[in-house]
Image (cartoon, rainbow, N blue to C red):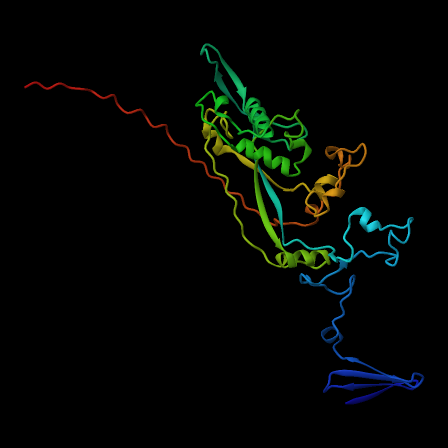
Amino acid sequence: MVDTPLGNGARMTIDSAKGKLYWADDTLDRISSAYANLHTEHNPRTMWTSYGTVPADNEGIKLELKESFPELTPVQSQTTSSLIDVCGFQSAVPKNVGQIRQTKEISEAIVVIPYLDSAASQEITTTAGNETTQQQFTVTPENGPGNNFIRIPKWSFDGQKKNIEDGKSAVPGAENVISGIEYKTTTISDMIGMMKKYIIPPNLDFVKYEDIDPFVMYIFEFNHTLKREELADMWQGVMPQSALKMENDEVIISHKISPFEFFGNIQDQKVLGKMKYFVFKVKKKGKQNYYKMTEDSKDDVRFKFSFANDSVGDATPPGGNYNWPYDFFSLIEKAKVETKFTIKKKTPPPPPTVETETGE
């Protein structure tokens, strides 16, 4: 035990055996004490300070409604009634406030746009076979990066875009005049869905801006699931465990070439070997519509409403909003893109069968 004078009649004693501090002042008629390791022994927990863990089901901050004047009843007073009863709430039933979800999936994506160093064209023969024209199969978007991207035929892009927006297959069998086969999804329809999901630079966003000619754009999506404890850390400004380690992930896009897929409009597919790639990262679109933000809440259905002159579709800030939470973290730190093309020769038709007769 160590006895230390502090001056002005105050003294402090350290009891190392018990791990406690004792101090006193001659002006005060009492002795105060505390554990030497305050954080370990006392572990103060408050609503706005210190670090909080996820509470158990029977713990946490609860909200409870009680009558302001429980001694009064409608029978005793004709001018007093229960607001709890009028609103249909439950009295004296505690409800948990602010529960953290179990998991949260976050996403980012890498955009890979094939391009050629110079514009390219090819000879196209009309159906009648009596006229040959030159057709560009590259496109350079206005105010773009100056590259010659691989064009997607407008008829194929517009048709598939309308089909998936109408909830149909990308290419219904009735619209496939080539083989009559139905394609539920294609590389073109998958690209359209991803472009609606992610924030594409305006000068390249031909899904949103129809005056931009469509071109081939691969979008590789990477996902990660945050656990409940990590979400609790983030709400408290603490770095989650996922941010403390690096992980390798791989996304593969593989497809055949056909009139309804990427590069289906290129006659000589050897040009694919000359392609280079424009690569950048894009962020997922966060919810900005007020009603979309609250649609998964557990509010009482009786209190779901729309504001006057503010329809569900219009409840979005006109100038955009903070793209929360996706603009406030980085999921992909480094990417490596590899490509592989397999060009197969057409299988020649089998030779005709020759029938021979043998005599006896």
